[in-house]
Length: 241
Ligand code: SF4
Ligand code: FES
Image 1 (cartoon, rainbow, N blue to C red):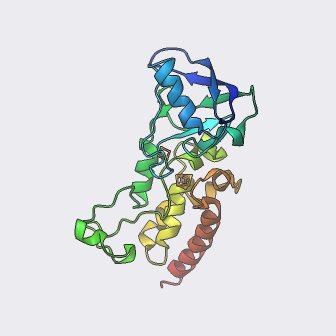
Image 2 (cartoon, protein in one colour):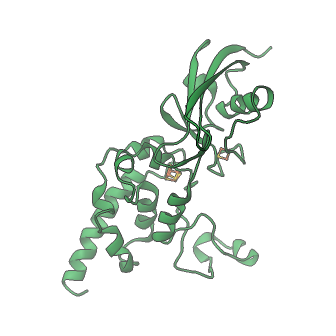
């Protein structure tokens, strides 16, 4: 007989042109279930108007990012046991630093646009034949674009970033990590953007991005490395190399 806990989900709700509120739902759960399972149960048995995003249920698509008790989590891989105790209240909120579309769903468009600005794409336009080869041999129609290895484009790092909270134009952790992946010695054309007021120097080195990243991309370390790349690129530029 699986262990049973009673937990209360306190879920952020907001529809267009309505004030925000929190709704509470008390459920019997197996503590080894995931937070996303509990949210789906709320939707299935309590409130069909609840909006939330999910797709793969195995930490691949990056769709299910939310804040659980104020901390960014991929809810499909976060067990109830890891964040709660029996009879606990779990506050579920949408990611910060993105516009809210409905309830727990945010508009991720700005993240994708900033990834495009540093020429990294969530989906590369490669052919079926190319995908059979190792990634470093892929030739895409837009070969200047890359994928940031292991990044799910989940937005957790942007939500946790204290600078993104105060400066909307700041490129932010995942796009800067993607720029680091390009390497400025190979892509000097990206220097102007990276060295701009909304680029690599805006980071406060809080490393909140690295702490919440579910995919070990380590954007904080990558941003520190990108600073070194930027200084080297500027020295090369100064000496005309
Ligand atoms: S760097 Fe990590 S937290 Fe940020 S979008 Fe990519 S996978 Fe998500
Ligand atoms: S549902 Fe795809 S990462 Fe969670």
